[in-house]
Each structure stands twice: as C-alpha cells, then as structure tokens.
Image 1 (tube, one colour):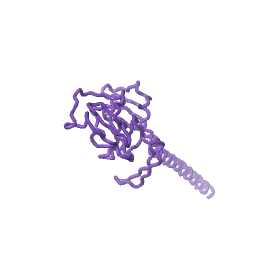
Image 2 (cartoon, helix red, strand yellow):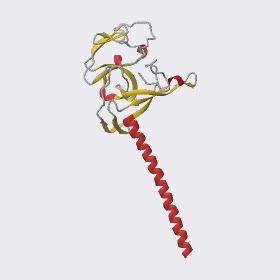
Image 3 (cartoon, one colour):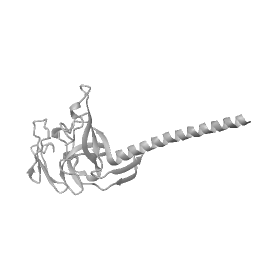
Image 4 (cartoon, helix red, strand yellow):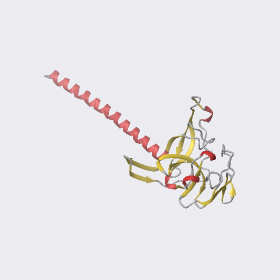
Length: 224
C-alpha cells in the first residue's frame, strides 16, 4: 500500500510539472504574439516594395521598416473583413512635403501603397510639362525619375499636366518618384490623413529577383 501511495504521489508530481511546463510554453507563446501585435500595430511595421513606382528611391524587392508612431499609431482589430475596434493615437507630427509614406489605397483600403508627399492641406499644386510647382514655386526634386520623353497634354492624361489644385483640409497629395509610371493622387485624388499608416524609415533587406541575389549596397540605407 505504501509503495502504491508513493507511486501515485510521484505520478501526481510529474503531471503537475508537465502542466506547469506546458503552461509556461503557452504563456510565452501568447506573450510573444501579443508583443508582435503591439509592436507591429503601434511602433514599427515591415513593408515590401512590390512595384517600380518609387524608382530609383525604392526598388522592387526592397524591404523596409515603417515608423507608425510619428503620424499616430493605430489599434485596428477586425474579423472576417469587419472592423471591430479602431483607435488612432495622437500624432507626433503631421506629414511634411518630402516624406515617403505608407498608406491605405483610397479605392481599396485593404491594399497598402507607398508614395512621396508633395503637398499638404492648403497648398496649391500644379504640374506643367512634367515639372512640379507648389504655391507657384518650381520644386527641386533630385529623386524624381522620368522614363518617357513624351509630354502628354491634359486632355489625354493628368500625368504631365495637372491643376492648379488646392489640397483640401485633412488631405495630402501623393506622387511616386517614378513620375511616368506611378498611379497616384494625379489620378485618384488627394489622400485623406486617416488612411496614412506610417513614415518609411530604413531599408533592412533588398533582393534582386532577376539575378537571384541580395543588393548588399542598399542594406541599412535610410529612406529619403
């Protein structure tokens, strides 16, 4: 009888240790998931460049971190396509001209775009034969790329001749650095500030698919 009781107690202690170890693993996993959600949702998020609309500032295959604090972090919880909880924290500052910004595409908020802010609310934007003017001042844009020598009249496209247009309150005007190959505010209008997600910070990886190799010279470059 005594040996049976000892065996029972031993099994009980082993079961308790197993449950305790399992509980520790579960708590560690839950904590890791919560930290990931908090960091991704409130502090920083990774983003991959899928198109060439920001060339040569950003290339297809670039991976970068986005600062979500600067324009106001979001708590955005949804289920089955329905938003359950949403809250945006106060911004450290509003977007400035020249900021490279990740945002929800207005025509399909489930998709993220990345462009450069070229004008903010109250400013007048005009494009004359590919040249950008803000408040009647020609802008110096060393990062801009033009790959098409043609200049399209405004009757055909808003690409090369646009405006004048006053950016409305609560909006910013976004354009890709690859001006001849960018679907941006010239075509879908000014961006509401509530669709802004964060400011592009730094490249942490870059992969050139055609050569199947990394672009080591781009790693850890700040996005400007």
